[in-house]
Length: 391
Ligand SMILES: C[S@@+](CC[C@H](N)C(=O)[O-])C[C@H]1O[C@@H](n2cnc3c(N)ncnc32)[C@H](O)[C@@H]1O
Image (tube, rainbow, N blue to C red; front, side, top):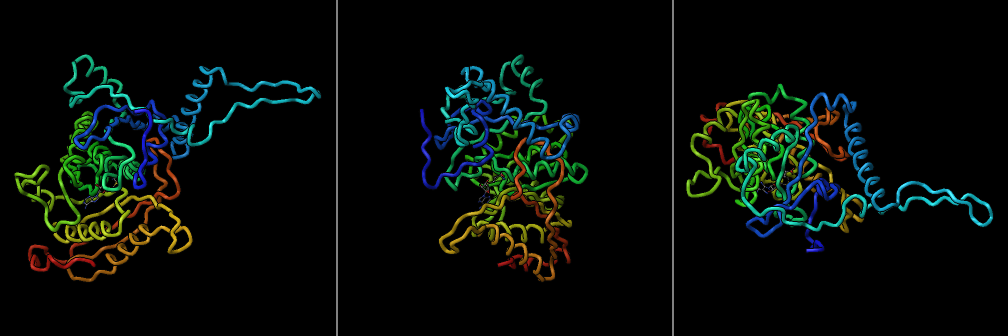
């Protein structure tokens, strides 16, 4: 394969677009025949963040610096680096500048995937020495399997910037998440769930589709060493926002056990969701799910939703607009205004000035929202009202 073909409905996450080739490697083809890559995402320790001066910009600069270094090395190899000064025939200074590659070329080279190994093994199954070596250099690295340039139905197989923002938030609020039971909705590759389990006790990492959930489970296995110190665990399960109930059919992969369902309803105090509002029907389903869950939980529950506002030019408005975002905001307002006597919700936008633990560009269009639900009545006493949901 020497060229990737982009179809009109193909989307590629900026997270993958802006990574130079050497940072991800194609490892296998998934059940759907899509190339699967593995990317290493660096998790900065407190010391490393202090060294770099903390803050989003410091991290961005560090990454840019790394990329510049890489570019210079490449230029060096090609013999193109440096500025040559010459005099032209009139005696004027003639400066030959280094040829700047245009943005699309410099930010990401053409992907020419090479299958390194086509196996279903994860590091634990590899040879002991190799595994130990891997362990030593993987302390602060999250390894994530993902695909690239997917259709909209498969966007969960890529990592999105909202996942990084939410992961950063979790790491900056370790005390809040410590020992908690957390539910992630629309978890995709599972990156945020993995990070959350470095402090939470139980993370139910949920999404839809066996192929995606299998990839997610592999990512959990690849990163178990990061969760072990805090004793956290991630359970990958199916939770479809367009279905009324959790699937407990034992014949179905990634279905819930009765024990897990009871644990979820009795103990969940935090729900997280990253970049899950991009289609109005799905957003409606997501909010119905949030309402249903929170009004059945035993506890007050706090929901954190990260998102990236994506501007599009629309013929309808003849201007740039952000329709999916506008719909999300309407759903938030409806939830806040809801008065059904069972549960009340408050909504708050949070500042995104917390520390950055992962390397990505924290662009201004990234937002974080906090929704708090408080049960007004004992949910078991009002189970007959369970069909009520926000429109
Ligand atoms: C843009 S991706 C975000 C993935 C991940 N949270 C991230 O930020 O990298 C949106 C996610 O919503 C999930 N999703 C879409 N429809 C869903 C549904 N009906 N029920 C549950 N999850 C759904 C997708 O499978 C996908 O993983």
